Length: 154
Image 1 (cartoon, rainbow, N blue to C red):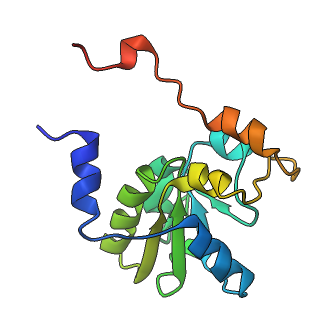
Image 2 (spheres, helix red, strand yellow; image 1 turned 45 degrees about the vertical axis):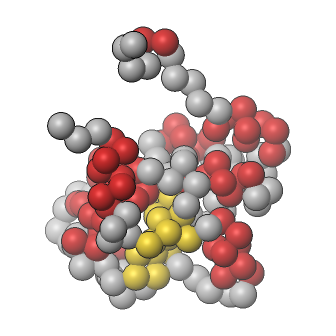
């Protein structure tokens, strides 16, 4: 039986990652990749990188293709564009990037360490109203909240 971490490790054989500081530099140099945030709506609304396109992971495949209610034209026509897939910690984004590669996206990478790493690198994050979120508030929002009943039995 495979675990979540096994799936991620396997996907990393196919998916490249970009560090937050490298992405920040590319953006500062005027590069314009699609910043695809695949987190859940409540996560995205709490904080996200300015200019990110939000498509929850559960809608990704249909958002990337034509002729669906969930089609996002920028994605469906963006198979040749650079895409940076973003999640909270850089795990879900690896799996999503692998899926996008299978769907024909030529230049898709995962943001290593995700939004957490972006915040740790002290890059700006914004809420649903377009207000910049304080770094300490972002730390609190991004903190892990694994309950005891969610931990592996010993």
